[in-house]
Image (cartoon, rainbow, N blue to C red; front, side):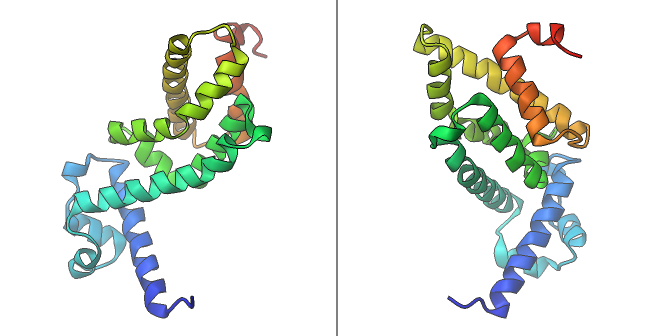
Amino acid sequence: MKTTGNDHRVRVTKMLIRRAFTGLLSIKPIQSISIKELCEQAGINRGTFYTHYQDIYDLLADVENEMKQDFQKALEPLLYTEENSSLLGICTGIFRCLKENYDMCVVMLGDYSDKQFVSALLDIGRQRCMEVYSGFFPKASKKEIEYYYAFVSAGCIGLLRRWLADGMEQTPEELASTAEKIMMSGIAYLETAE
């Protein structure tokens, strides 16, 4: 199918709106963002905004849905192939995906993030991670692994927030290595730190 100039304009307009929205959402809660302010940031008029969205919450739903699809698409090869079924492989892939989607990372992990949205993203990889953990800890019960996943995923969210605050200075591979060491050795990680 041939892309028309009109399709390109729609994509560019939506990209401008998304960038302006995620920029504003990184510094204030959604209820404090006005359509007027958003349009000024995006360099569009209100009519253009309303051509694509009913209101700010419709925009949020669209952005979150797009982010969820992108995240799921990026994780599929990591979560469902044998060569990437190590903690290091999964973590590296997740951190790469987040670095490539910085605006998504800001929305997901910022002070004004939607907690339900973050939970939905964690659920995407839950089953595969549970399988990987079962392989590492064959004597653990399903409930123990669920608790471990809850603990580790909350810790990874904190680690990602720190990475974001530091300007993502570490490479995804370095951060994944750190995460894997912390997950596998807990506080003993500090004893081996250089």
